[in-house]
Length: 93
Image 1 (cartoon, rainbow, N blue to C red):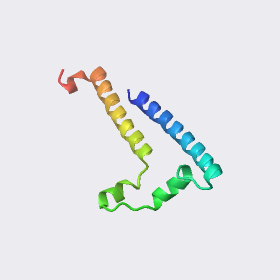
Image 2 (image 1 turned 120 degrees about the vertical axis):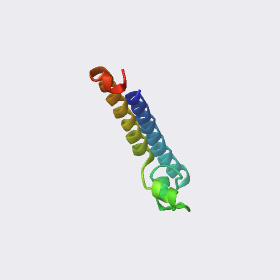
Image 3 (image 1 turned 30 degrees about the vertical axis):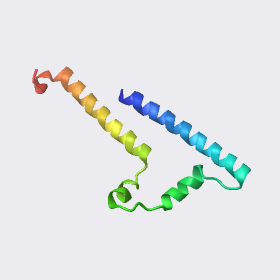
Image 4 (image 1 turned 90 degrees about the horizontal axis):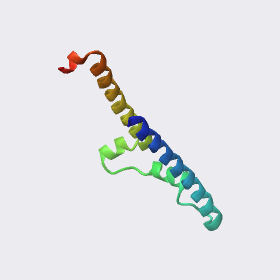
């Protein structure tokens, strides 16, 4: 499930990235400015959150945090599986 979730998240990220860049180019051609893509990303980076938890946490990219978190869950599940197969007495069986 971990690998499937990471794959799905990566595909959604890829689609979002593609859409944002297409929309940025379209808006620039049509309106002379853009509110999406690199323009929006640069503006978002300039903004500072008002409270300290948000300022600290917003330094990290959401995609990398979620992929890292899912990887930790996957490693924990793999560890439990290995222990259950090779050392079942450690888990109380």
